[in-house]
Length: 232
Ligand code: ADE
Image 1 (cartoon, helix red, strand yellow):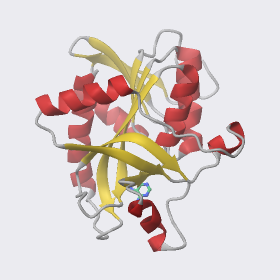
Image 2 (cartoon, rainbow, N blue to C red; image 1 turned 120 degrees about the vertical axis):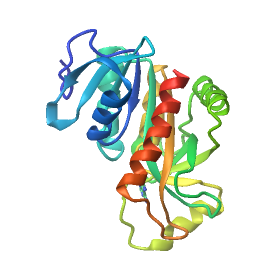
Image 3 (spheres, protein in one colour; image 1 turned 180 degrees about the horizontal axis):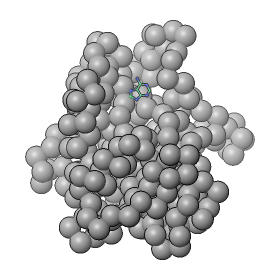
């Protein structure tokens, strides 16, 4: 076991889906995987391994925010040998042409977090998705006739901002949407020479103020999870 994950050696697959919400991890495991085991319940951050169309896949909740996501990602890579990490999460739209339920591939992740400030002595590091996973996601989305967009996203350190309009500067520079984990995931994947991609479904819009309902989020989540499972 590692500090936060109770799995035995070999219980975690090389390829893993990473929703923020542990109950989404359970939902993916119960809905799509066969011969499933639950390998982690520490802190309620559920993790499962099963098979999808014969291929071994794990799914692990990461919690919200870069620090929590980096704890699980670090342990999965360094202690359990995970090689392909696909975040499946939600995001708030920063652009008017991004609608609720749209699916976005995070090609790169700007951030308000200081995780790389010290590491790169104040210079700016650009956390980036793995090209092979991006290519596979695009090809798979075409096969499944799922419309996707791709670009720079913001991994924010805070969900509630003092000034609602603070998103506008990011939006002007082409940032598509905001979430809270991808910059940490991509940084660690690069550090350890493994592959990572974030697939995001738009759950709300800072431009229009719209929000999806819980039932709608579940449906949108299913499309994204299927895309992630099929591409691996
Ligand atoms: N995830 C989904 N919507 C979000 C938002 N508006 N801000 C940060 N993370 C999010």
